[in-house]
Length: 310
Image (tube, rainbow, N blue to C red; front, top):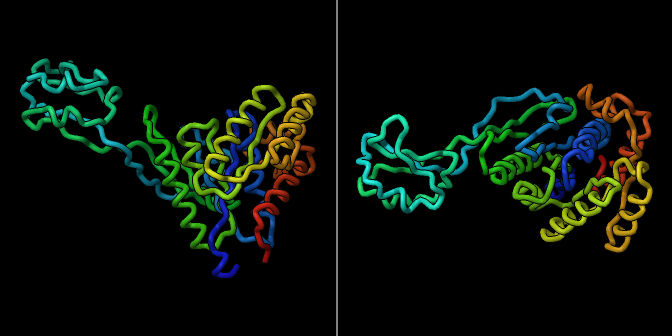
């Protein structure tokens, strides 16, 4: 690859909810990209930091975990607190109470605290300070299919968007270092904050949906999100043969919206069997109907990204 083309393309795979087959397709893409002998190695990101599961299939050898420090929460120094109560009225989140262990001082509930710092300014004794929080860990892991960037946000933490941005940035920098052609992002489900962070700056969005009214509804929501960020989109229907009328409705919607429907993957029991084994379906059952359909989706996606072979 020439220096002019060193910037890696970014493909994001999305779905309106969990369970549509997004991660199964992402894992198969990892295997297929590694098996494509004439292409540069690709880099993979599991952007579902609240419930990451791509690593369950790619079996990574994790390098040293790195800490993710997110927002700050207010904490009271009991040695300085005089229990004047000035902090409690300014807290909009009702997070300040008498300390259950020492009723002579105040205590801030870390779950209820939103980190607004109003109490810090209200305290006449300077007894309250904002303390940064260790909110999760992120990993750069070797797999047999390429490098995987993934993370885990601790339960109850709310900075998933920032953590997604962090691992995406790390993956992009790594991809540039090794002159990779593409970063493949297994996106979070839905259209919330982590999805917005995962979408930003991507070159193509592959929306995985199912043939149902809910699938069509979710497709429209995800498509709207991608269009808001000016990300071109294509559609793939998983389990396309279980409800032909639903698949037909998705075809008609895609045609009306001018987006390509690049694949229809049939229902295949080999996919759940592969997931139980913790392997991509294209590895365990390469001749299955689902594996062949996913391979077609992969080749079409590869072509749309204009990735160059050696």
